[in-house]
Length: 413
Ligand SMILES: *[C@@H]1O[C@H](CO)[C@@H](O)[C@H](O)[C@H]1NC(C)=O
Ligand SMILES: *[C@@H]1O[C@H](CO)[C@@H](O)[C@H](O)[C@H]1NC(C)=O
Ligand SMILES: [Zn+2]
Image (cartoon, rainbow, N blue to C red; front, side, top):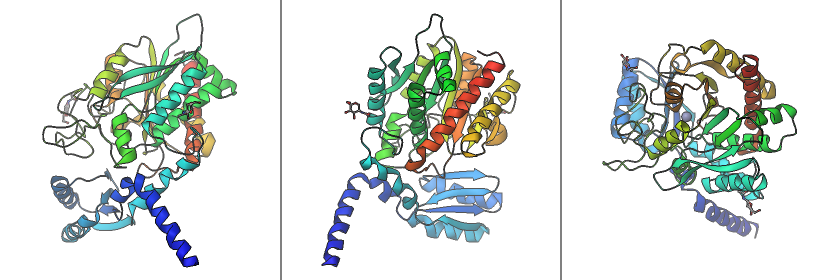
């Protein structure tokens, strides 16, 4: 009898899981490898893999390469590693287990919360609800359009005053799989709207905020429902592959570093030309239309780093020293929350690697915006437990408080 019950519950569980979970099945038994060895050997392995297959995740650091390997590719990876004398370590045996928990909390929540990850429609529903709740100073704004016909929606928070305020722009979720960024961004919105903390209230009141939790909603929806590791947009290329990396597609030094011209490249295809993607093109038009933009802040994950422009050059912008000082204060405020230490602040070229065609470089170059930052939030392989979203939400809120505080000290506001 007990066995029978167990069997019935087990099959019910299975039915529940399968509805929503192509996503997890897709990565079942995928292994996360850490591989080290000679540059020559590593290049051979990467060349082989990139030429013949989609690699849903790989990242290179001086200490070696992490890559996510499908079960069918394990033998060939092991074979090449052996012949090239590379050292392989399997750091995760089944990647799907890491991402399986991410949606578990969803069903226990009543309405919107910060203990679960939500799809685009819910995030947009939250923005709408907030604009209805605070009609005098919160309004839904359309930052652009997407390939699949969505709007890029944001919330403008602008409490009434007599004079014009400087604009503070927040761009989040440009990389679809960086789920913690939309979640943290709506958390931050909630803090601006509801916190009784005088520092947060004064930060809110000082700016005309334009906050976009997911500027790549097609990609995010695809990552949420089909392929957890999806990063790009969902435009269709002539050869049948999908998407371009929207943070390689902006019209500044396009294609120069860390960019691919192969539409099938899973991570770094820069698009067929600058602003080939409707998302970046329309968003850039929205940004150009903003007067008096003081700050442009982009949230990414999961390098746990604070980056300054330019991303593809180690030359320093004219207010580099100020940016560095403001960034340091921001990180100190963030650190006080969870004792999590970020790298930086510094340019991507100096801390991570050079990358061209990103939004912050275009913004800094064409708009001359004084305060431009990328916050790379925390996590492991783009994953972060939903039950702990509030940790990064509070951390980022305090980072923003620190940023504003030091910007005031230095006379930017
Ligand atoms: C928005 O408000 C409506 C009406 O109160 C509610 O039913 C819905 O769940 C809310 N949506 C979100 C995403 O909070
Ligand atoms: C593009 O990259 C090349 C090769 O590193 C470099 O020589 C050139 O100056 C770069 N161009 C721009 C516009 O940054
Ligand atoms: Zn990113």
